[in-house]
Amino acid sequence: MVTSGFSRIHVAKYAADGAAVTYSGCKELARAKSMTTEITASEDNHFYANNQIAETEPASFKSGTVKVVVDGLNAEEEALILGLTESTVTVGEDEVPVVQYGADMNAPYLGLGAIKRMQLNNIVSYRPIILTKIRFAIPGDSAETQEDVIGWQTQELSATILRDDTANHNWKMIPKQNFETEEAAIAFIQAVLGGAA
Image (tube, rainbow, N blue to C red):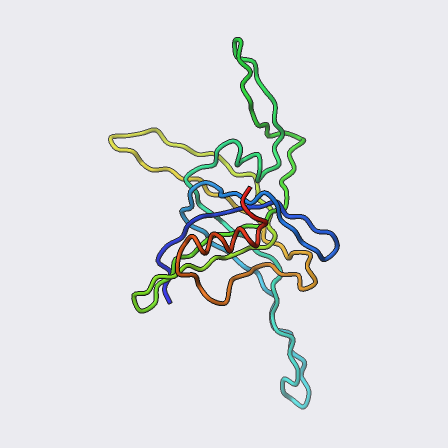
């Protein structure tokens, strides 16, 4: 099965009460370009006896990062994923709402969902991926002037992948079978991440 596309990044606020994890305010985050995860795992831990491996503890997830490339966040989306404070600036007689990067910002824990489009034997299907607990880093800014033609510019976001607070301490979730439509995959993401805002 080959990956043939990527789309529809969603985020939702994460909360935990003991081992009970809930999500709220699920919303789509900008237009999706790509997503890459890098996972650090422990090494297998072997016990030797009688001159051979007698027991082994398998490798396990230690930490990870996810990089997502989007067309660009608006101010409301930046405020959501980075925990920015809001204020206003007076311009003439108008009050202009702003979001502020300052000492009060506190990036929240979020759940993240996205969709991989897959193809096998010329049949297309859609696989939702859920990262159960992440926290975004502060993104940088970059932009270039337009030349003879528009050079399309994107925004890269980076987040730390963590284990969630469930009894199993999950960090990723996928359905056992892909969905026939992108809409069905979106419904799955919204069901896991607490429904559409």
